[in-house]
Image 1 (cartoon, helix red, strand yellow):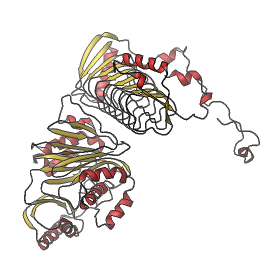
Image 2: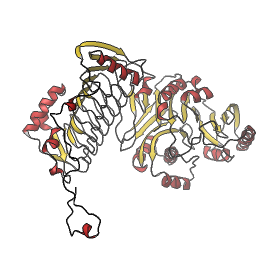
Image 3: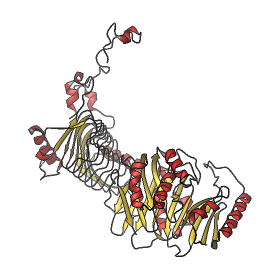
Image 4: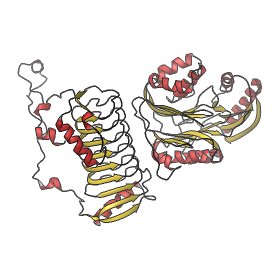
Length: 313
Length: 281
């Protein structure tokens, strides 16, 4: 089933981590397997924030293979070596869990080559690179993941999130949402639904040099949109193309450094409730997610079939 | 069922040994039978006996059990405050009751009801009033998808706009929408009527095989099996009366509405009892 949520504050910085945590916790019943956040914080003007993992969470319910912490340390050392070879300067680093890290970097070259190099280290995946994006996903509900990563302290303007009920792929971090729009900085995607032409599109995109880290069909949307943008197509235009080029039932949210968008397939088979005001846009698979922000009576509606909307901060 | 004749191809192949005739379901509703009007848990309520319930800290189950307890105590008017978009509130009420929700409901609100009059001052999520049998439900704001899915009777009114697949699989009753309706409205509808004062989305009436829809605005596209039909004087008269009773669209010119019906005829449909075929609407 899965639940997705997003919010964007216009011209205002709030405790975005806490707000998105509350929205996702209200949607826990739609997917208890894993939870993910793409938070657009105050960020760094010059430096990139890179979130990456060198292994998987192997707690109860996970389908990942158990590995020792010495293996994680070894992979982290290999990543550090790659960064030196790439000419990236590590401004600060933070180890969140035995397998998960946050680095602040100075780097001015091509992000695709950068990512390929880092991800050549076994089991290593860049979850996100961005000037303001911080993408975190792990096994557990929103409260568990948020506490584990200290997300309720992150301030920002907007974010998207996902509670996952694993269906066609494993319960692990690599299959959890959001997905980073590799190789573009600050692009993330969450999705509710199923894509039925996943393999055809994946093979075509892989032939164009795009990378897939999981076998989760939702990852296709992120890669698909990234490939569109790589060709110079705008995000909104790419989203509109997706309505006819991606087959299946879907509602998805996309976020960039300064915008948030949603698209709903032509069957309108997956839910989305939308609240819009001059200051705040809030979206959720169910209204109860929005109610965590706005307990008073509000006007909400369901976007229609084939609808694409993009909001700017 | 098929009337397979001796000497037919199927018969010569030995596929069938008996000729099947008539309908398989021979038990019909007996309007004289008292048991058809009795439900376990039916309550004798007084509409003048009124109470307010705050749902803020109640779970769905707690509130629904509370409603039954109140009906058991004779309360005929119940006002529920702070429903806050919770799911499955007010379901399974098989009784007369004046039920008012001051706020919005989540999914599957007031489903499978038979008899109550419900007013919801906010919005409703997906599948509101699913499988409703009788009664009246009025929603003051918008509704999500699958509004009135599989209803069999009663009046279901949304003063705002509704999502996709409104009236999917409906088997009777009337759905009235003050605003627009999404894609696949009337999908697979079998009986009943849908009135939309605004625009209708794509594939209106797709795979419908009976029932009637009246559209006040534009129609994005008709689904397979749906066709436009002539609006009769009886239709106009009925529409005026229905909108008046529903307290919606008082100045709406119903004579300009587009009528949509099924363009296909089901196999064996003429053999159905006329009362059964038309009774639901």
